[in-house]
Length: 263
Image (cartoon, rainbow, N blue to C red; front, side):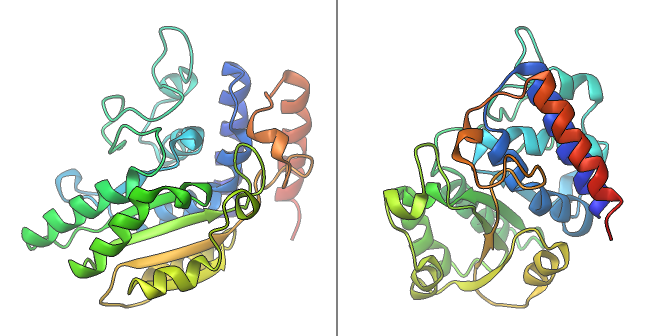
Protein backbone atom coordinates (compact mmCIF):
# COMPACT_ATOMS: atom_id res chain seq x y z
CA UNK A 1 0.00 0.00 0.00
CA UNK A 2 2.93 2.33 0.72
CA UNK A 3 4.28 1.74 -2.79
CA UNK A 4 0.86 2.41 -4.35
CA UNK A 5 0.47 5.68 -2.44
CA UNK A 6 4.03 6.73 -3.27
CA UNK A 7 3.35 6.08 -6.97
CA UNK A 8 0.23 8.23 -6.71
CA UNK A 9 2.19 11.05 -5.11
CA UNK A 10 4.93 10.76 -7.76
CA UNK A 11 2.34 11.05 -10.53
CA UNK A 12 0.75 14.05 -8.83
CA UNK A 13 4.14 15.76 -8.88
CA UNK A 14 4.65 14.72 -12.49
CA UNK A 15 1.45 16.27 -13.83
CA UNK A 16 1.70 19.31 -11.56
CA UNK A 17 5.10 19.93 -13.10
CA UNK A 18 3.87 19.40 -16.67
CA UNK A 19 0.97 21.79 -16.18
CA UNK A 20 2.61 24.22 -13.75
CA UNK A 21 -0.64 24.13 -11.81
CA UNK A 22 -1.38 24.93 -8.16
CA UNK A 23 -2.97 22.81 -5.40
CA UNK A 24 -0.11 20.33 -5.02
CA UNK A 25 -0.37 20.44 -1.21
CA UNK A 26 -4.09 19.67 -1.27
CA UNK A 27 -3.59 16.71 -3.61
CA UNK A 28 -0.76 15.18 -1.57
CA UNK A 29 -2.85 15.58 1.58
CA UNK A 30 -5.56 13.15 0.50
CA UNK A 31 -3.50 10.56 -1.39
CA UNK A 32 -3.65 7.94 1.38
CA UNK A 33 -7.43 8.21 1.58
CA UNK A 34 -7.82 7.77 -2.19
CA UNK A 35 -5.32 4.90 -2.33
CA UNK A 36 -7.18 3.01 0.41
CA UNK A 37 -10.55 3.60 -1.21
CA UNK A 38 -9.58 2.56 -4.73
CA UNK A 39 -7.38 -0.39 -3.80
CA UNK A 40 -9.11 -1.74 -0.69
CA UNK A 41 -12.70 -0.49 -0.43
CA UNK A 42 -14.56 0.52 -3.60
CA UNK A 43 -16.34 -2.21 -5.56
CA UNK A 44 -15.64 -1.33 -9.17
CA UNK A 45 -15.61 -4.73 -10.90
CA UNK A 46 -19.08 -4.40 -12.45
CA UNK A 47 -19.44 -0.88 -13.78
CA UNK A 48 -23.25 -0.75 -13.56
CA UNK A 49 -23.11 -1.93 -9.94
CA UNK A 50 -20.04 0.05 -8.89
CA UNK A 51 -19.74 2.01 -5.69
CA UNK A 52 -19.70 5.77 -6.28
CA UNK A 53 -16.89 8.09 -5.22
CA UNK A 54 -17.33 11.86 -5.35
CA UNK A 55 -14.39 14.23 -4.98
CA UNK A 56 -16.04 17.29 -3.50
CA UNK A 57 -12.74 19.12 -2.88
CA UNK A 58 -12.20 19.11 -6.62
CA UNK A 59 -9.19 21.44 -6.53
CA UNK A 60 -7.42 18.20 -5.53
CA UNK A 61 -8.30 16.66 -8.88
CA UNK A 62 -4.67 15.71 -9.50
CA UNK A 63 -4.93 13.19 -6.66
CA UNK A 64 -7.96 11.55 -8.24
CA UNK A 65 -6.39 11.49 -11.71
CA UNK A 66 -3.18 9.96 -10.36
CA UNK A 67 -5.15 7.35 -8.42
CA UNK A 68 -7.29 6.39 -11.42
CA UNK A 69 -4.11 5.99 -13.46
CA UNK A 70 -2.49 3.81 -10.80
CA UNK A 71 -5.67 1.69 -10.72
CA UNK A 72 -5.57 1.27 -14.52
CA UNK A 73 -8.72 3.34 -15.10
CA UNK A 74 -7.03 6.32 -16.77
CA UNK A 75 -4.32 6.16 -19.41
CA UNK A 76 -0.94 7.85 -18.98
CA UNK A 77 -1.68 9.96 -22.06
CA UNK A 78 -4.95 11.21 -20.58
CA UNK A 79 -3.34 11.84 -17.20
CA UNK A 80 -0.56 13.88 -18.81
CA UNK A 81 -3.18 15.92 -20.66
CA UNK A 82 -4.18 17.45 -17.33
CA UNK A 83 -4.59 21.25 -17.42
CA UNK A 84 -3.11 21.61 -20.90
CA UNK A 85 -4.45 23.73 -23.75
CA UNK A 86 -6.47 21.29 -25.84
CA UNK A 87 -5.80 18.65 -23.17
CA UNK A 88 -7.83 15.84 -21.64
CA UNK A 89 -8.51 16.76 -18.02
CA UNK A 90 -9.43 20.11 -16.44
CA UNK A 91 -8.08 21.61 -13.24
CA UNK A 92 -11.33 20.64 -11.51
CA UNK A 93 -13.23 17.46 -12.28
CA UNK A 94 -15.55 17.11 -15.28
CA UNK A 95 -17.71 13.98 -15.29
CA UNK A 96 -17.57 13.75 -19.08
CA UNK A 97 -13.80 13.18 -19.13
CA UNK A 98 -13.73 9.67 -17.63
CA UNK A 99 -16.39 7.06 -16.73
CA UNK A 100 -15.15 6.93 -13.13
CA UNK A 101 -15.34 10.67 -12.50
CA UNK A 102 -18.87 10.84 -11.12
CA UNK A 103 -19.47 14.60 -10.88
CA UNK A 104 -18.33 17.89 -12.30
CA UNK A 105 -17.14 19.86 -9.30
CA UNK A 106 -15.15 22.87 -8.23
CA UNK A 107 -17.42 25.14 -6.23
CA UNK A 108 -17.10 23.81 -2.70
CA UNK A 109 -20.05 22.47 -0.75
CA UNK A 110 -21.68 20.56 -3.60
CA UNK A 111 -20.37 17.03 -3.11
CA UNK A 112 -22.24 16.10 0.05
CA UNK A 113 -25.66 17.34 -1.15
CA UNK A 114 -25.22 15.49 -4.47
CA UNK A 115 -24.07 12.34 -2.68
CA UNK A 116 -27.07 12.52 -0.35
CA UNK A 117 -29.36 12.49 -3.37
CA UNK A 118 -27.45 9.61 -4.96
CA UNK A 119 -27.48 7.55 -1.77
CA UNK A 120 -31.21 8.17 -1.32
CA UNK A 121 -31.91 7.11 -4.91
CA UNK A 122 -29.92 3.88 -4.40
CA UNK A 123 -31.90 3.19 -1.22
CA UNK A 124 -35.18 3.62 -3.10
CA UNK A 125 -33.91 1.09 -5.67
CA UNK A 126 -33.00 -1.38 -2.89
CA UNK A 127 -29.45 -1.30 -4.25
CA UNK A 128 -26.46 -2.55 -2.28
CA UNK A 129 -24.20 0.12 -3.77
CA UNK A 130 -22.46 2.62 -1.52
CA UNK A 131 -21.60 6.30 -1.96
CA UNK A 132 -18.35 7.83 -0.71
CA UNK A 133 -17.47 11.53 -0.60
CA UNK A 134 -14.22 13.35 0.13
CA UNK A 135 -14.54 16.91 1.41
CA UNK A 136 -12.03 19.48 2.60
CA UNK A 137 -12.14 20.94 6.09
CA UNK A 138 -12.44 24.50 4.75
CA UNK A 139 -15.35 23.20 2.70
CA UNK A 140 -17.23 22.36 5.90
CA UNK A 141 -17.76 26.11 6.25
CA UNK A 142 -20.32 26.00 3.42
CA UNK A 143 -23.99 26.17 4.41
CA UNK A 144 -25.05 23.55 1.85
CA UNK A 145 -22.92 21.00 3.73
CA UNK A 146 -25.02 21.43 6.85
CA UNK A 147 -28.32 21.23 5.00
CA UNK A 148 -27.27 17.84 3.66
CA UNK A 149 -25.90 16.87 7.07
CA UNK A 150 -29.37 17.36 8.54
CA UNK A 151 -31.12 15.45 5.76
CA UNK A 152 -28.91 12.35 5.45
CA UNK A 153 -29.73 10.88 8.91
CA UNK A 154 -33.42 11.64 8.40
CA UNK A 155 -33.28 9.50 5.24
CA UNK A 156 -31.38 6.74 7.12
CA UNK A 157 -28.57 6.71 4.58
CA UNK A 158 -26.32 4.03 6.02
CA UNK A 159 -24.95 3.63 2.48
CA UNK A 160 -23.28 7.07 2.65
CA UNK A 161 -19.73 7.56 3.94
CA UNK A 162 -18.07 10.97 4.04
CA UNK A 163 -14.40 11.77 4.60
CA UNK A 164 -13.14 15.16 5.71
CA UNK A 165 -9.51 15.81 4.78
CA UNK A 166 -8.75 17.76 7.93
CA UNK A 167 -5.33 19.29 7.21
CA UNK A 168 -6.30 22.65 8.77
CA UNK A 169 -5.07 24.74 5.85
CA UNK A 170 -7.17 26.40 3.19
CA UNK A 171 -6.42 29.06 0.60
CA UNK A 172 -5.76 31.93 3.00
CA UNK A 173 -4.74 30.35 6.27
CA UNK A 174 -5.71 27.92 9.01
CA UNK A 175 -9.26 26.72 8.48
CA UNK A 176 -9.81 26.55 12.24
CA UNK A 177 -8.80 30.22 12.59
CA UNK A 178 -10.55 31.72 9.55
CA UNK A 179 -13.97 30.29 10.42
CA UNK A 180 -13.81 27.85 13.28
CA UNK A 181 -15.55 24.54 12.64
CA UNK A 182 -14.28 22.61 15.66
CA UNK A 183 -15.41 20.49 17.40
CA UNK A 184 -16.51 19.13 14.03
CA UNK A 185 -16.89 15.59 15.32
CA UNK A 186 -19.33 16.71 18.02
CA UNK A 187 -21.29 18.76 15.49
CA UNK A 188 -21.89 15.81 13.19
CA UNK A 189 -22.69 13.59 16.16
CA UNK A 190 -25.34 16.12 17.17
CA UNK A 191 -26.82 15.77 13.67
CA UNK A 192 -27.07 11.99 14.34
CA UNK A 193 -24.15 10.78 12.22
CA UNK A 194 -21.82 7.91 13.07
CA UNK A 195 -18.55 9.79 13.56
CA UNK A 196 -15.00 8.45 13.68
CA UNK A 197 -11.78 10.44 13.89
CA UNK A 198 -8.60 8.82 12.59
CA UNK A 199 -5.10 9.34 11.24
CA UNK A 200 -5.82 10.09 7.59
CA UNK A 201 -2.43 8.74 6.51
CA UNK A 202 -2.91 5.31 8.12
CA UNK A 203 -4.32 2.89 5.55
CA UNK A 204 -5.44 0.32 8.11
CA UNK A 205 -7.22 2.95 10.19
CA UNK A 206 -9.01 4.27 7.10
CA UNK A 207 -10.19 0.80 6.08
CA UNK A 208 -11.27 -0.11 9.61
CA UNK A 209 -13.28 3.10 9.87
CA UNK A 210 -15.05 2.35 6.58
CA UNK A 211 -15.87 -1.18 7.76
CA UNK A 212 -17.21 -0.10 11.18
CA UNK A 213 -20.87 -1.20 11.15
CA UNK A 214 -23.60 1.40 11.62
CA UNK A 215 -27.20 2.11 10.68
CA UNK A 216 -26.44 5.82 10.18
CA UNK A 217 -24.58 7.87 7.57
CA UNK A 218 -20.90 7.86 8.50
CA UNK A 219 -18.49 10.76 8.88
CA UNK A 220 -14.78 9.89 8.99
CA UNK A 221 -12.69 12.87 10.02
CA UNK A 222 -9.16 12.29 8.75
CA UNK A 223 -6.46 14.27 10.49
CA UNK A 224 -3.92 14.86 7.73
CA UNK A 225 -0.95 17.02 6.76
CA UNK A 226 -1.10 19.27 3.73
CA UNK A 227 1.73 18.34 1.36
CA UNK A 228 2.19 14.93 3.02
CA UNK A 229 5.18 12.95 1.81
CA UNK A 230 7.34 15.89 0.77
CA UNK A 231 8.96 17.39 3.87
CA UNK A 232 9.42 20.96 2.58
CA UNK A 233 5.75 21.09 1.53
CA UNK A 234 4.27 19.62 4.69
CA UNK A 235 1.93 21.95 6.62
CA UNK A 236 3.03 24.92 4.53
CA UNK A 237 0.29 27.19 3.22
CA UNK A 238 2.36 28.36 0.24
CA UNK A 239 1.97 24.95 -1.40
CA UNK A 240 -1.70 25.57 -1.85
CA UNK A 241 -0.62 27.79 -4.75
CA UNK A 242 3.14 27.41 -5.43
CA UNK A 243 4.09 25.68 -8.67
CA UNK A 244 6.16 22.53 -9.13
CA UNK A 245 9.22 23.57 -11.14
CA UNK A 246 11.72 21.04 -12.47
CA UNK A 247 13.95 21.69 -9.46
CA UNK A 248 11.10 21.24 -6.98
CA UNK A 249 9.97 18.05 -8.73
CA UNK A 250 13.44 16.50 -8.64
CA UNK A 251 13.88 17.30 -4.94
CA UNK A 252 10.42 15.95 -4.04
CA UNK A 253 10.79 12.75 -6.09
CA UNK A 254 14.12 12.04 -4.39
CA UNK A 255 12.40 12.21 -1.00
CA UNK A 256 9.58 9.92 -2.10
CA UNK A 257 12.01 7.35 -3.50
CA UNK A 258 14.02 7.39 -0.28
CA UNK A 259 10.83 6.92 1.77
CA UNK A 260 10.25 3.54 0.11
CA UNK A 261 13.51 2.28 1.61
CA UNK A 262 12.45 3.22 5.12
CA UNK A 263 10.97 0.56 7.38
